Length: 306
Image (cartoon, rainbow, N blue to C red):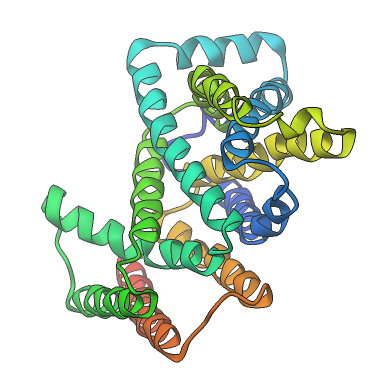
């Protein structure tokens, strides 16, 4: 079944597939810093641009495979090119582009733990956005969770000597992308293809800019070229799995799965010997306690609504 055609209330089988897809996506993202470390030979601008450009053919192949036939693929693409849908996917592409750029920069500058911080606080930021901008109701445990995370971020700022602006920006851009993408009823692969096509001109400009200071790493050897080309499938696979899962499982389940990626990223940063002072540890403990309260409240309310 094409994921553009799933019913409003997915079947139990669809939800199970969505759960597997979400688990795969977040586990892949959790280990993704290990792959990016192999790209340390290249300029950050080239890594970002190559990552997007090589996602185009990866997404195009996925569209054909997941659609099952060329006719269905063309039908789905035509639907994605409707003005309203094209505008939605262009908006989501802007947020994911900034998110990817920040993430690549943080990993290649040995700040994986800071990137993990962003994805730990993302669920709590989503709640705060709902309250501030959409007048959503907030429970007392959620208030406690957000307060603990806020204190944790302040402590993290003292530990780093400055507010963790990059982590906060990473969190906001990902949250915005997730919200927009969940509201785009197109197949995961089609959505990614449109997003990366929209970003392609910008990425070509990035490659030109990077080439002004030094030869592109893609041209310096087959090993470098292969690794950079693999960044396309490595980007496309988990993102399509996420979009696939987001339309089949609840926000509650998706939110709980989200903790997989930053947990693995956090352990990666520790394994690479990034600074982890007692003050920084205290900030993470505050955030983890907040997340535990948040998760408990989320599961409690989900059971009450069953």
